[in-house]
Amino acid sequence: MLLLRKEGILNMDKFEYYTYCYDTEGWSGGKVDVVRLQAELNRLGEDGWELVSGTSSNQAYGQSRSLIFIFKRKLNY
Image 1 (tube, helix red, strand yellow):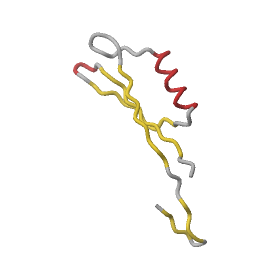
Image 2 (image 1 turned 90 degrees about the vertical axis):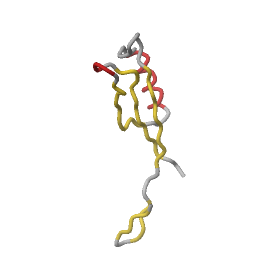
Image 3 (image 1 turned 180 degrees about the vertical axis):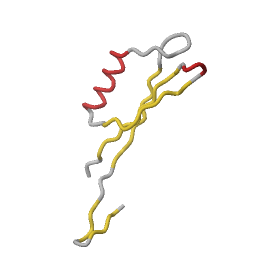
C-alpha cells in the first residue's frame, strides 16, 4: 500500500504477524506459570517481535484454558 503526499510517494512499513497460544495449567485451567510465560515473551521480544494484543479464551466460570497473544515485527526488505 502506498500513501500519496504532495512531495511524492511514501512507502508504508510492512509487518508480519505471529499468534502465540499459551496453555494454562491445572485441572480446569486458569493457572499461569508466570516465570515460563515471561521467559517466552522475552524470547519473542529478543527475536524482534512486539506484543500488540493479548486475551484469554474464557471457559465456564471465568476459567481460561489458554492465553492468546498477537505479535508483529517489521519486515526489512
